[in-house]
Image (cartoon, rainbow, N blue to C red; front, side):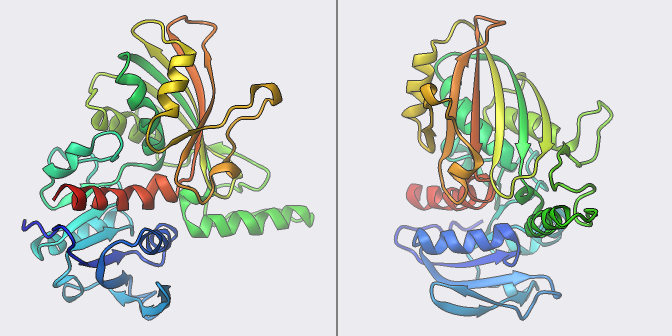
Length: 342
């Protein structure tokens, strides 16, 4: 494809799925980060076409995604789901645009880079018209694993996630608010967006179970982490849980290294790593919470400690905004990375 990413070059940008939770966050961040835009096109389904959205003080009308809508576009942020991304991939790339895709459609394709800019920035330049944005929990995890693995090789990672309603989209967030009110008013909470109510409840992730009894979300973490970190044999196991939190995911991570890793050194490495902040007040038993990171760019890490069952293992806790760094921000950082390197 033709590389449209030139220094000081304003781009024609399309956001496919602009009315969804991630699409709306992409618009906010494009504005906040002063991304170089010459023209912005908001694209969605025919059902939501005609809706008005505000960007940088201007009111824009959402258009239906059509072949003509991608003509002359330099960059497409796609956040409308896997089937939509697959449907429009050829149209987008044949128009000469770069597609940064937030769905799972192409993440494991051999010829599609899967990129977290702080972890594997060089992979972005290998694209053939499509770059995949990783799963939200994977982004947060690899951001923390990578600087530690650069110091001492890892043997095994065990992670449990505590995933907010935002991971299931804007409708799930609204449902959690509404069902919480239903319970508080003494009524039965009946979920229509998620398979079970999250109000005062939690359940194992509802993505389809695989033959190995791991769900799809858990296997995404396994396979995507291996690809991003170029560790195809990394032993990794995940358990993913939906919890009654509106926004921001949390993860409990146990990491086994090739040999002993000092807790102080690990803390120092993470504290100096891009995209991470340390929140630790040991005297007050105060560590990262979803409320610390909601609406923020940084992933918070804390309670870094030695695993008392294994001298070569460390445990830590992290929280990160699923919509922001776990989706929209990472996608925009990929585009910014290419702008800087062009």
